[in-house]
Image (tube, rainbow, N blue to C red; front, top):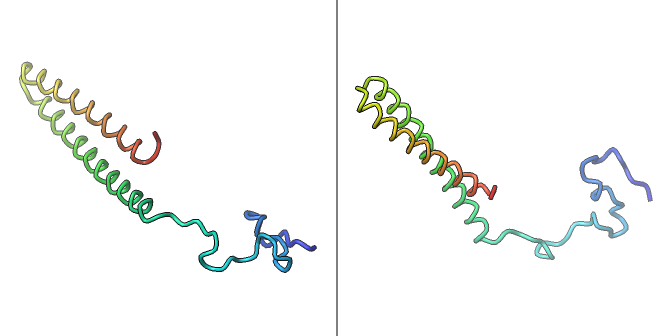
Length: 108
């Protein structure tokens, strides 16, 4: 048996002698092929849509924080303290959204 080592360095299982009926022989369609179910594919798409929505929410929270910072810079002391409290709540929301994005991407 002569194996060509230059054909593929990344997938040695495909370099086996194809004339012997070994593992590199192609299977007929429908024979023991594992394909993702429709539910799994839909779950992946749904997860991607959720992640995109969470990313947009995060962008909105970052913009809100920027606007609140600008308003806080211009506000009187009592108003600036109230705005600082809101900014802290926005930061908490950003952490929660970030955690959800991590979970939705499969990083549990």
